[in-house]
Length: 192
Image (tube, rainbow, N blue to C red; front, side, top):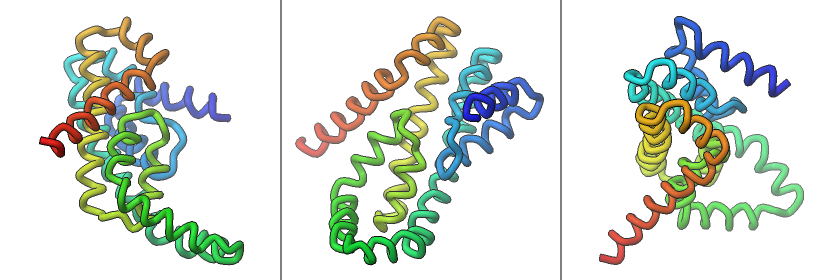
């Protein structure tokens, strides 16, 4: 089933309304959809290299907006569905500890996970469930999602199909290296 869905997303990348589909998939992926927008971004940027950054901007804006929905899901629905179960099984204190840890380290989780291929919806829902500061969450989302999609678009713009193969095989390595650079930069600023 997942393979069929992936094939369908690839077909949408070639449609005349591909930009709208790209926005919809980037929005949905940040809160509930299983296929990342890269499945459309890559073929679209390869087909129209001059529009690669426009496609990255569409992905970034839509993904951050979808992240707000994911945050809302974690904030509103998590308490109604998961909280009673946590208390029933005696995990209320563990959940409180999770919320405290997310408040302390949540920014770093958002910055790192927002760049990697790990489903961003996990981060968005967890941020809402932990009651992480919404505006700080949104700012971190803008930075990480923008960096991720613009990195892919820039590589595709300049290096074309050869980088597509590299990205598909080593996407985790590429985005992890960028994440380490961003976290390292923030640490350097903090220590200076």
